Structure formats: C-alpha cells, structure tokens
Image (tube, rainbow, N blue to C red; front, side, top):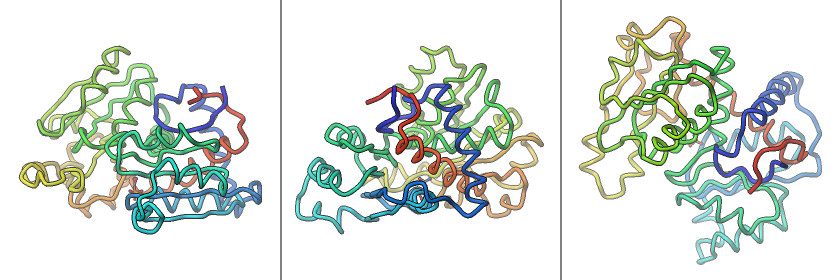
Length: 314
Ligand code: CP
C-alpha cells in the first residue's frame, strides 16, 4: 500500500520504518551537501492551531531543504478564517486547492483523522491534542537506533505525563513492533499511561511495568525518555497540576544511577524536569534528537510526495 496520510504510529510496520530510516540517513548527507531541488514545484502547508517550535520549523526547514515551498500559519485559530467560525473540514478542503501536503497540529484528539477524511492531499498529524504525535515518535525511534544501534531487547523508561503525552503514546506503539522490548512507565497515579496503550501492549505480548518512582528504574534503562508535565492539558484542574509538577527531575545524581551507555531523551520543550547541569553529559541526547527531526521529516516528505513506500493507507 502507498503512504498517504500519516495519522497514527500504528500505520508504520517494520518494513516501512526500515525504508524511512534508510532515506533519513540519505537526508543527513543531503543536508550536509546543502540540500536538493527535488520538490521545486511542490508546496507544503503548515497549519498549526497549537504552539510549536521544533515540529513546525523542522517541517518547514525540511521542505525548503528539499527545494519545495511553504505556506504557513502558526496560530490558525486566530490568523485564519477559523476565527470567523470556519470548520476544520472546510479549511482543509480549501487548503487542498493550494498545497500538495498539509502538516496539521490541532488541540483536539482525532482532528488529523477528521482532516484526512476530507483531504485529497496527504495530511501529516503534527500532534492532535493528547492523541498522537507520530512524526515525533519516528524521530525518537531513529534517534535510539542511531545512538544505541538497535531497538530489539531495549529497556526504555518513559517518565512524566504519560496520560496526556502524545509523544509517549505514539512511541509505545512503534516500540511494540520490536522483539524483546521492555517498557517502564513512571508516572504519578493521575498521569498513568492509558489503558488503550496498555491493552495494545498486552495483546502484542510486550513486557511493561508501571512504577510510581524513577530512582529504581534508572539503573535498568537503556533509554530514559523524560517528558514535561503539561500545564496546558490540565485546563482548570490546577490543583491536579500542582500535585504532579516537579515530581520527576533528572539531575547529576540521576546520571550517577544510570548506565554508562544509556541515553536521556525528551521531546522538548523542557521546563525543570531535566536540570541544565545534565546537558553537558554525553548521554543527554535530546538536542541531537531534535536535530534528527529535520532528517526524518525530509525523508517522510520525500516518501509522501514520491509515493514510493507501502504502509497501511487511510
Ligand atoms: N516535540 C515537539 O513537538 O515540540 P514542539 O511543540 O516545539 O513542536
């Protein structure tokens, strides 16, 4: 099947991941050589209803480094006709007339799927509320492969806001494709990983444990995937946010407990959940991880616009 819309991580099987990462490696060379002009006549629309630094800029940079052009709004709720009451569906129908691919970030879970239902051109889910962030998970997986060398047999600790964190949800789906992976879900009771993910892992026979504290897990993990407690997802439940914020902080003491070959990842932005002093440690992979987003998104755009790969189609 042909890669068309990118809505959720479950679309990506091992063969597609392998192909994507092959192209991603090529993209690292393309960037080093100054980019290419492959998509001179193609236009990418970046339609963002929620703030972003990494996802929007890396997608825009990716398209430009491929020679394509970009039209963009970083605040669609305010700077598009959505402010006048236009629906997401009508906005997407209109953008179909202007762009060859649409990168969509939205505050509602399921928004990317709704957009795909009315779109002829590929929709890329750049985060749909607390739903999924599949392209982040792709760059996360690429980073793990590049830093550690393999995914099979890996022990990965996901820490923080697992209930509302779309990156960890997508990453758990991708990791469940691999053999012998063990996941540690470290979260306070209010922010536990949701049952849809846990049930998926049970069905696939993937080993996981839930832990309320981080210390016991640090010496075990090959990857510590830290996340931010997301104030914006709590709405008016301020008391709940206050109960959870600052609960897990990676410090120099955490580094001492971790394996020498382990890495620390974070989708970013970070607040105080990774102390600045950790940045200088070679195991701090989060800035390299964000850089990989450019290469992975170049590869994804190439496969989508070329139409040469075969994941499940929506
Ligand atoms: N990781 C991530 O999605 O970052 P942005 O919100 O800055 O795009």
